[in-house]
Image (cartoon, rainbow, N blue to C red; front, side):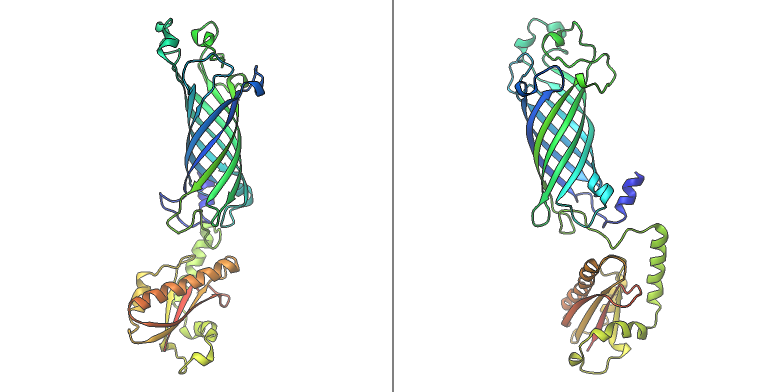
Length: 363
C-alpha cells in the first residue's frame, strides 16, 4: 500500500471508472510434467477485464476455457474445464523505470493470483460412480496463476496493447492415489488438501492477447502526469509559495509577464489596474471560485489579451501545455460572458518563481 501511495503522487487523481480495460486472449496449455508437450497441447480462449490502480499496480479478473482432453480421458463435453482467476498486476517497467506520462512501446508486466478451477462432465461419465458425484466429472478446486506479460502498446494514444504471456497454473487438489478422479484421468496430484506449489500439479500455458483501454475522464486512455513527484514537505513549501504569490505586489509580476505582450498590440500604457491575475493550483488548469469572481469584474464590452504561465517545476513541454490550458480556460470563461478575447497564449515558465498564473490585460 505504501508503494501504491508513492506511485500515485506523481499522477493526476483519477476517478473510479478511469483506467479500465478489456481484452481477449488465446493459446495452448499442457501439463507441465510427465507428458510430451508437443503432442498434448490443449487450445484455450479467455476474457480479461481489469483496472490499473496506478501506473505500477492493478487488478484483473480473467476466465479461460479449455477445449481438449489431452492427455486425459475424454469427459464428453466440448469444454473440458475453466479457470476463473483474480489477478494482481505489477508493471515492472514503470516500477523500476518510472512512468513518463504515457506507456512505453514495450513493457514487462507480472501477474499473480488465485482462482476457481472447474472441470465439466456429463451424467454418462458418472453413471457408474454416483456415490462420487461431487468428485467425478464436475470437480471444483482452488487454482493459482503466475505469469509474465511481454506487452506492446500502440495506437494514437497507446490505447491498444498486444501481449505474449507464458504462465504456470497450479491446482490445489487432495490426495489422488486410488481415487475415482485419478482413474478418470485428472492426473494432477498433490500430497494433501493444503495448497502446494508443485510442478507435478501444474500446467504450462503460452497465450497471446489483445487489450483495449477505455477513455478516461481526462480525455486520455492512460494515466496523466502531474508536474513532478514531491514529498509532503515539498508540497507544503510549494503551497507556501502560492500563498506568497497572492500577496506579491502586482508590479513585480507585471515586469515578468506583460513584457511578453507585443508593443504593436498595446493601445495604451499598461497599468496595474488594467491587469487581472488568476492563480491556479499546482499542475491544474481549472478555475477556482475566487478566479471566477475576479473575472466577473471584467465588463462584457471589453477586449482582453491573456497570457498563461506555469511554475518552474516539471519539464518544459509539460509546462508549455499547462500554461496554454490555463490561458484557454480563462478565455473560454470570458467568451461565455461576452468579453472579446483578442489573444490567449501560453508562455510556459516566466521568471524563476511559482507563477502559476493567467494574466488578463483588459484593453
